[in-house]
Length: 279
Image 1: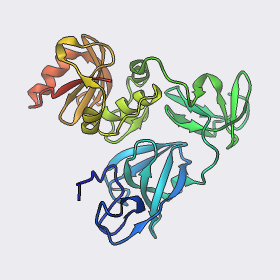
Image 2: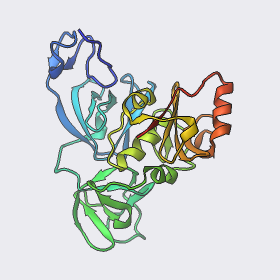
Image 3: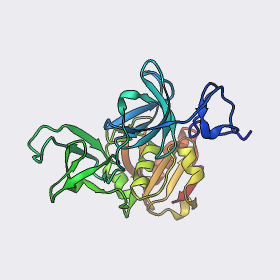
């Protein structure tokens, strides 16, 4: 059998997705059930425990295929947006409704209980969250959940950002969080993924997957805006031929810095640039 990556293929020794039967070994194969994320964002963990490693996050409106919900309220499944597999709280899951109509384009937006920004917000949604607009006027979109969101913070789901680097720049100053992909906490590959997804580009979750799948080779001598610079376990976005933007554990936030300084600092830790890719 061909070895499949368990990060993006739903299989364990005891349980696997039905469509993988014949490709992996498992004691039981099941059809999944489709659910929707109903919290602003949900932790997707390596194991069914609040103490387990955070691998990624699922954003409001994202759809998940769930293969198991255990007795402690943990659901094991796979994201439909990037195919990532993991455990998340079943409390974050809701029924599937109509397809989302709009996505959040601001770093953060609020959903108010009525069409008045002076009302206490009912929900806060991150960049990339998806909503269903039941109706809208020139100020607010009212979601099917009854939240009123400023239309300036939304765009149709089919809209594509013309400059994904500018999207990454909106998250400047966001704290570094391994596995995060919101303005409340984000890691290097999460920043790349969120930014590229707004431009309509499918992007895997982890940096090694991104290095393998995205674009075509370029070089440090030909850097231009939008290139991606990879190290083992790290990725940065090129703002211009002299500047990078990345979420990194040195600054513990999303920062822009001179490319030469970043490359020199990371090399001093024992890691050289492994490639430059142009999406």
